[in-house]
Image (cartoon, rainbow, N blue to C red):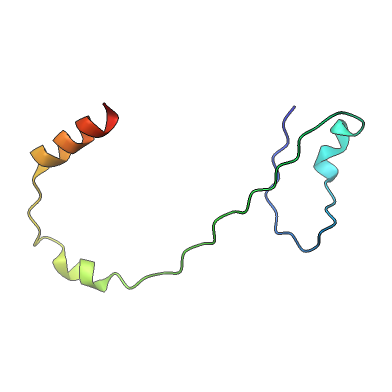
Length: 69
């Protein structure tokens, strides 16, 4: 059985009611810090470039093929 809990830690004492079925069993607890949400960026420069950039679709496909090989 696996229990995955995403939460914001407010204390070093953790209460995990979702883990009740595992009480008395050997378990592994791993704590992984979630990446911080990114702050919004000003993308107006990209809006001004829309429709003005020529893409080499053959080169893009070639890079995709090579990246999965």
